Amino acid sequence: MTDYSRLALMLHRVRSRGLFSSRSQRLATIVFVVSLIASFGIAVIFSSKPSKEPDSDSSDELSTASNESGGSTAMTVGDSPPASKPTAHEAIEFESSLPRLIHEQGYLSVTVHVALYDDGRNRKRALGDGSNPDANMYWGSRYGVDVHLTKDAGWTRVFKDRGDERRMIRRSVFHRRVDTNDAWMARTVEAPFDLYLLAVAWPNSRSVEATEQPLREALCGESTVISIDGRDIAFGAGSVITGFLGQNRLLTDYWDPFATLVGCRTPERQMGLFYISPRSAVLLHKPTLDHGLYSVLFARESITPEAYLLSGMLEGLASGELGEAFVTQAVKSYAKYQKSIRESQAKMVLMQ
Image 1 (spheres, rainbow, N blue to C red):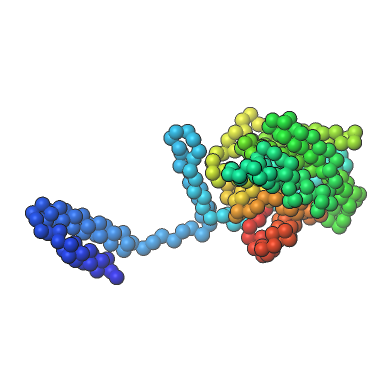
Image 2: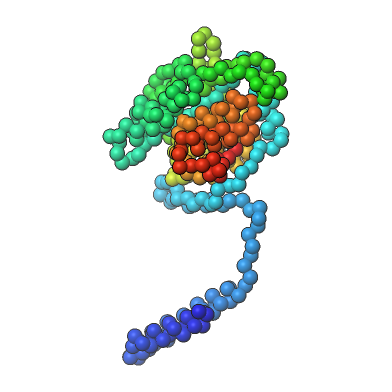
């Protein structure tokens, strides 16, 4: 149906409803019809113009609307970003630092900050109690970080405490021995070395801080040293990779976590960063690269941020292959434990 046909049909409906029965009604109807014709004229003029094709290389748009009352901001996110890789310079800087650290200190470390899951409705269920890590979905449950790594992923817990019992309410350190292989030999690592992981549990009420903490470590040099069997192990800024696991608060309460980094010094070496969190790539991947960090693992779409994704990513590190291996190993773990997801689908969800 053309625009003119639609206009004729609407005029017919106006007449059929008896809107011309009195002088006042006729006057009101004339005003209505004139406005209607003008609207259709404008629509026809604009519809006759050729549409502009979008640029093929245009970036995804993220629009935010400020809340005048100072509360949470509403947000609309565009399509997920395409897969991208670190530049050759970035890859050399990050990857070349690992053999040097292994030769100097005999170990590598990784740090992960876990914001506990909170279902917000049925807090009686331990899985969804964001203040209790013991059985929380992301920490103490079957696929939580504190359980999965030791039961299914070949790690040994070598340290555990209650953090500061305020901001960080649990800390665990896990260890595994990494054997040399062809990939590590090609990187001049010819002997086995130790790999440590510090996992920090944050109450859900402090998930914003937990989201920002990896950035403070990677860009501001905040570090943590824990003594393991008489050996001081550096985490945070002392790790080669730091990151976050949990729900993405940026999807509901948008703020710029990079804007909070005030007075930070330039890091001495490039660190790896990951966010195992729903749609983390949409909001954090580009800023990660823009700030000179090495992208390890992000999610384009919604995911369940459980520990098998973390253990898969760590296999990419232990393999010595690095680069795409971080995603490849995480994809395998995701497909293994999420029975309804095939590897081909998982590749579309996860990215480096």
